[in-house]
Image 1 (cartoon, protein in one colour):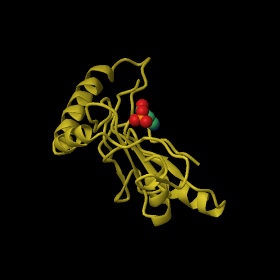
Image 2 (cartoon, protein in one colour):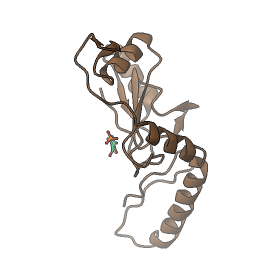
Image 3 (tube, protein in one colour):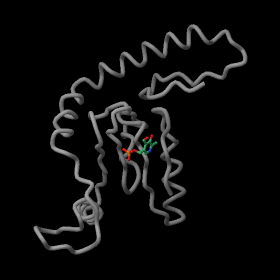
Amino acid sequence: MIPVHLYGKMIPMSELMTQAKKANISVIEDAAQAFGTFQDGKAAGTWGDVGCLSFYPTKNLGALGEGGMCLTNQKALAEKIRLLSNHGQAQRDEHTLVGRNSRIDTLQAAFFNVLLDRFDKFQEKRKKLAGIYWQELVGIKELTLPPAAEDSNLHFFVI
Ligand SMILES: Cc1ncc(COP(=O)(O)O)c(C=O)c1O
């Protein structure tokens, strides 16, 4: 099952995980738009077997080019993901499976580290702008506005 958290908001994960466990289905959480959002004190991307983050520049927390991250606390899965993202290479010139080159570029990782420190400030600004949208658009009855974002990060303001 691949739940996708959109616009910074999370799908009710506790309920989803209960259903997935009952049906013995693995969960890959797409948290590309929900970096930094928490539910019941647990971060988006840390509920499923694997959580996927995107650091594409348009994201809540983006590098200046391509980047991303997989989160898991399952050792075997972590090792497999590391292999897959590095040409299936366990060590130099020893390929144990068919993988690809999905290594984050070192420069992008450096940009990311700098921007990570500014994440809270970026969110503050997004929420301030969203506040202006709410204030100015609430009177237009033809529009449905997104729910308030007190408990989550804000990514897009979709009407
Ligand atoms: C919800 C969601 N999932 C996945 C992706 C893909 O991210 P990437 O292009 O970094 O793999 C995006 C990016 O647009 C996204 O918004």
